Image (cartoon, rainbow, N blue to C red; front, side):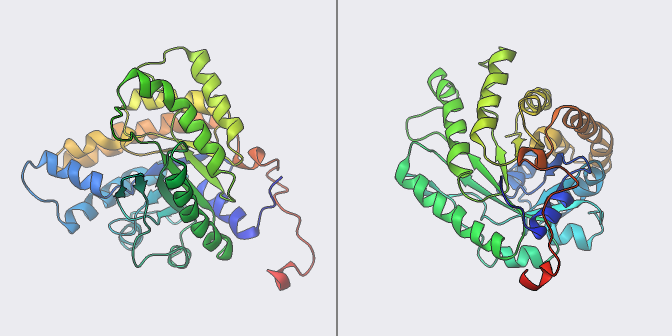
Length: 332
């Protein structure tokens, strides 16, 4: 059983529902969001203010239906606080990595955002830190390098007593194609082994990929079994990410994952991506506040019904998360 510190408990409470379920919307996209906006505008470059506007719209429309939102430091976190788009009772996760990755002959390397830190994330009032890492457990040398980066952030999160969420993403190596049956067949074992390796470090929540491709694997029993294997591999509470699939696919993934032991979801583009195709602001905001808000409500219902509370995954109950002794504060 993991011993929980008081700051981590408070942060996890802030990003989950009162029942201990994570209902989180990701809006921390930077390079990918810029590309999405520019695709709709054809040749026009999306400038800073335009990307900020999209973040403010997303946050204002969707934050009320979440337990927390995930925002980036470049265009979203401070802007949504100062713009009044993020309600005070909604949890805030902030990403710490630089957008994209460094290419290396051995694989992809994650770097931290220059000028940004765990200390600053804590200082701005955020509830948790999130790190995306490209990860292949079978590429030992590069995997060890990525684990060192995770460990470095882990130590800072322990120092500042703030929850740490890690998002590992599988990727194809040279000569591989994610659409081929060979890669699809390998993906479950890659995702499950990744969960095993990364949760061996003292992180708090794993943001996991769905361990199969619903286009290729249609057996509900098999999908449930794979998610149960993922649940067994993860030593910490985990949420399912959306990876930009369509909404219907993500809805199915959330239900299966939560039935298998997930503590909720942390979805982004699968929930709101079509909104970016509306070039008219009024239409875009209407779509976000109706169709997309309804999607979040539906996902919240599914997660509330099936998901495992984060504290139960750790072996605790809501009313006894830590043993507090007299004068605890003197050694805190």
